[in-house]
Image (cartoon, rainbow, N blue to C red; front, top):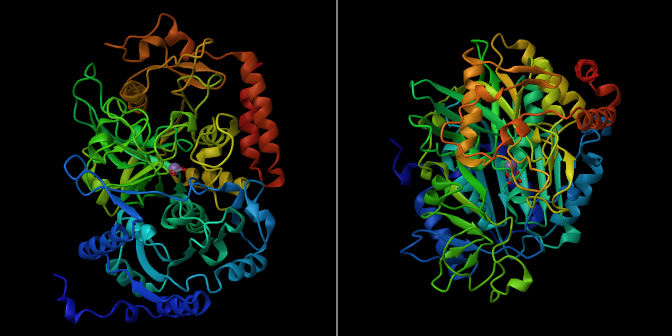
Length: 590
Ligand code: OXD
Ligand code: MN
C-alpha cells in the first residue's frame, strides 16, 4: 500500500541527480513555476481541466465520446521533422550516413541559445517516466522536462510516468535526460537533437508527438538503440502481437513496418469469420525491446503503455478494436469535428465534418477534413485485444520476426529467410513508399532498413553487425519473414485484401516455424505455394495468389543492384556477411 499522501517524500527530494539537473534547466529556461508530475489521476484531471479552460483542449461529445478531448496543433507542426533531427556523436562516422549529424559541442551551444529564457511565462513540468513494466529488468527510465502540458497528458498515457518511475530512478541514478520546449513553434527554430553518448535529448520548437513526446521515438528508439548495442539487446520499430491458434497454442511475432503501414491494425487484427478459433492479443503497436533470454530465445517487451496512432482510415471494418478503443478517454489531435462535437475523420462511414482539423469551416477544396497524420493517444489497456502479458517483467518469447514494406511491385506477399543472417539482409533491404507520418513527399520509394531509417541512433553498418551478433547468441533464434500487403495489379488495384485476412499469412509463418507446412525455394527466400496458404472463404481474383507469390527475375535484378548500391554507402562499416548474402541471392537469380 502506498503511504498516505502527507507522509510521502516530496518529489524534488526523491532523487538528487534529477533535482540538480532540473535546477540547471530552471536557470537556463527561467520558468514561472515548476510542476513535478506525480502521475495521479486527479493530477491528470486537473491538468485537462486547465487546458479546457485555456481552450487548448476541446471537450468532445460526452455521450458518444466520454472522456475524450481534441487538441489542435499549429498548422505547420503536424509530423516528425527528419531534416531537423540530429544524432550528435563525437565522431560523425558513428552517426553514419543514415543520420544528420552535428558535433555535440556545437549542438549544445545552439540549443542553449534557443532554450535560454524560453519558459519565462510558462510552467516547467518534470515528468519522470519508465519505458517498460515498472518491475522489469528490461525497462529503462528517463525524465522529460517540458513546457507543454499537452506533452504531459500524452506522456501520462504513453508511459508509466510519475512517482513510481522517479523512485526507480532514485535507486541507481540512471536516466535519459530529455529537455523539450515548444519554443515559438517556428519551423525555422526547430531542432530535435540526440546525444547518445550522454543519454540525452534536446528538442525545441515542435509540440508534435514524435518530436515532443520524448519517451517515444527519441528515447525508446534513437537513444535506446545505442544503449541496446552497448548492452547486448535490440530496440526496434516493431509491433508485438500474440496469436492463439484454434488448437490453443499462443505464439508471439514482432513485426517492423515503416510509419503508417498498418502496424497498429496488424497488432489488433480481428480474425475473419472464415478462420474460426483464432484469437489475437496485442502487446505493442510501435516499439519492441528485444532481449536474448537465458533459454536461447528472443524475449520482447513493449516499452510503451499507450498508443499514438494514425486516426484516418480507422473504422469498424479496418480496425474494429481501435475503433472501439478510441470511443472513450482518448486524446485526439488534429481530427475534424461534426456539428455535435464528435471527432470526425476520413474513412468514417457516417457523420459530417463541420470544422476541419484547423477549426475552420470545412471546405473540401482545402483538402481532407482531418489531417492525414491526425492521431489518437489512448491507454493500451483500452484495447479490447490487450494482452495481459504486456505487463510481464520478462516479456514474451518471439517465434518469428517480420519485416514489411509498402510496395506496388517487387516484393511478394510473403517470403521466409533461410536463416538469421539472410534475415538480417532482408531487414536491411527493406524499402517502402513514404507516408504522411513525416514531413516530405508522400508515395516515393525509399530504403528503410528494419523500418528504422528515421530512428536508428547510430551508423546502420554497426547496427547490422549488432543484429548479426545478437543472432549468433541465440540458440533458438526466431525465423525471419518479409511481407508486402500492398502489392498491386497493373491497373493499380490491390491484389491482397489485407487487414484481418493477413492472419492467413501469419498462420503460414507459425506453421512453418512448427514444421507443419511446406514452401517453395526461390532465389530470394522461401515462398508459400498456393496450397500452403489457408484460403478458405477468401475471395481473390483469379490468378491473384499466383501473382502475389511470383518473383519477376528482371525486376529483382534491378532491386538487388539498388540494394548493392545502397549498402555500399556504408563502406567499411558494412558487415561482410551481408555482402556475402547479397551475392548468394544474385547468383541464385542468375
Ligand atoms: C509513429 C511513426 O508515429 O512511426 O509511430 O511515425
Ligand atoms: Mn512508428
